[in-house]
Image 1 (cartoon, rainbow, N blue to C red):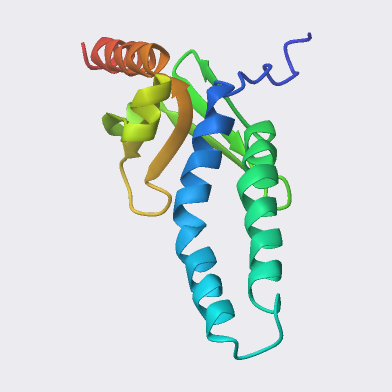
Image 2: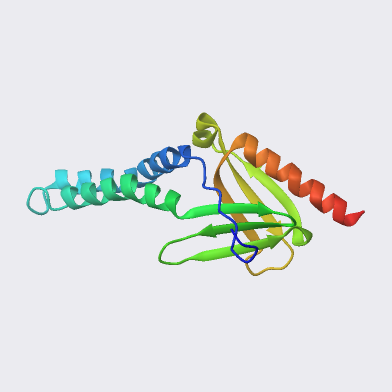
Length: 157
């Protein structure tokens, strides 16, 4: 690797795929229930509502989280955090530690069950002032938060 080449990105924790699938299944469940109700009402021929919704449900709940996982990465370099995400709509964000206002480490119930956390970095300014990095091992998220805090404190002194 030359000095000009970008650093290798660190992938998210593989458990992120599982937690994303669970969240997708739970989030899309009302659509399946609604399709079931419409199917039960027999407004159209059998399978008109439920079959397409179940196919879309299976695709979104199974395929999309794995694709999302493959297209996220991060690098915590000296003095900055780089977060890269997206496939069709690619976003490469670099957050200099000097612009960070505060840092959150969040865990929902599903994340907590799988030992994951989300690192949220709030920066000065209002356009793109929040950068979120989901799917980190909880210990890694805490370590990153402390490393960023130490770097900010060192810059202030």
